[in-house]
Image (cartoon, one colour):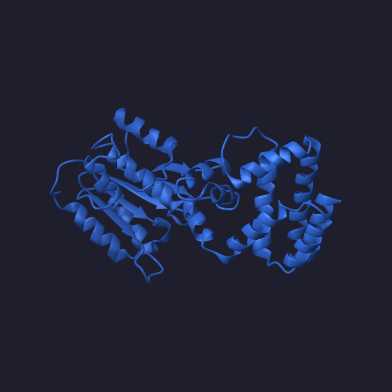
Amino acid sequence: MRTLNIDNENLNILKKAKDNNRLMHVYLFYGDDKIRMVDTALAFMCSFYNDDLNSKECENILNKNHLNLKMLEKLEGKSLIGKEQISELMLELSRTSLTPGKRFYIIDGIDLASTSAQNSLLKFIEEPVNKEEIIGILCATNFSKVLTTIKSRCGLLYFKTPSDEEIENILKSEFEIDDAFLLSSIAKSKTEAFSIADSKEFSLAKAVFYDFIEIDNQKDFTLFYLKYKDLDGISFSYFLNFLTKFYNASLHQLKLIFSTIYDKIKEISTNLDLEERKQRLDALLKISVRKESYVQVKYLLHNLLIDFFK
């Protein structure tokens, strides 16, 4: 089974409503990570069939090929979900199911639906067929683009952006430990992490970071600057985020974990006292602020080296 990205807090809210017979017939999930919203919706559907996510029934649901699940999303090559897609969905839901059990429809990107499509859905929400048998879950990353009238008729569940540590734990199942550490400082979802991980900017920023934490003397300082003084802005921003997380981690008790980065954090924590590490974090903050004023990377990089190794 693929690794799921589930919001357990919202899943428990839904399960509690189910246990208390207080479920609404349609919910609107909104937040930054569509995969997390859809995975949570699928896991919730599983709870009606089998508590074991590894069961055959749940495997079919999680693979989106269960007979009682209707998935709808923007068609490839289209900019919006069209009214005809909603009409087709409503027609399918009006038919008798071929298998027993609760039926679900999930619209992945209701904020990408046209106004006419949303109005068609609104009518369906207001006059649902088989209300007791069907649950709808609408997912949106842009809450403002969902019709107010739809919002008012849905149970609203906000999917908050996970912390760096939560993101890192999620990513450890998909990436090497060190990559999970670095990606969690710049990505706010698993989807975004996969996109960034494939970029040349991420690869370059990793190289800069690893070279930086190996600087040991004046010669290293000079060679590093000459090598990276023409670094592009995106890679430099990633590098600053990596370094900031690295020094933030050095201020806290470390987990016992084998990796290049964690070994280096331990080394920094041993070689620099707490005040020195705080000073380096302050220097990083100042560089990050100056970066927003479009100061050239080579000057920022030179100042960072001076602040760290003077």
